[in-house]
Image: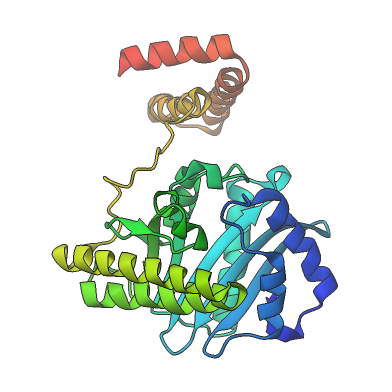
Length: 308
């Protein structure tokens, strides 16, 4: 954990290296800015960087910007190195972050995260479909409204900044009023983004950037009030390709379902420890065979689909 100016810079650089290596440059924040604001934070904003290590080596990095006056926390991104990627690494990282926030009593009415729909932004191979799934496991819900992440690249191409706005409300609920939603949007657009990037832009680019944000904010304001209240967890029109389960995953699920049914029959007829061991051993053999051999797996799925 790196909390503003009290952080050892040399150790932070190792985690920033993970960010640079596995996050697309298209929407990546310059690491010089990340270091600058850690030492010179903007008023009303607390900056916390999280680094994940495995056996002493940096393998993950995440950024939280917390606004205590509004009680809103914005997770800018979470990156995990491919050699440590997976549900286990992500959930371990998320749990450690949650423990820290609870320990430090960092309480938010909303935690927010943006998921860019543009697949080209996912150089770290954790595409938007995966990020949405993982965030939903952590209590985040998608605000059902067309949204643009106010990255500076929006000046050249608004379409490349299309995003899903994921919100974790406290207390949990399924809707949010348009007025409350726009308070979050205004903080993201003008406090979170414009105040961050403004000092690094020329006067002309800053004016143009502010103009685009203002125009998009007004369009978002109209959409929000036309759909008041806004549904949270509205995924039907999300425009994100949630990839279908792989053949291996389908086979694994089929084995689990069939095993559950088959185990109950012999145990009901002859309930004993010996019977249970035999049945479970047979189920384990089938499970390994199905997952490790493509021919067996496809034949098993064919039978399972016919039974269904």
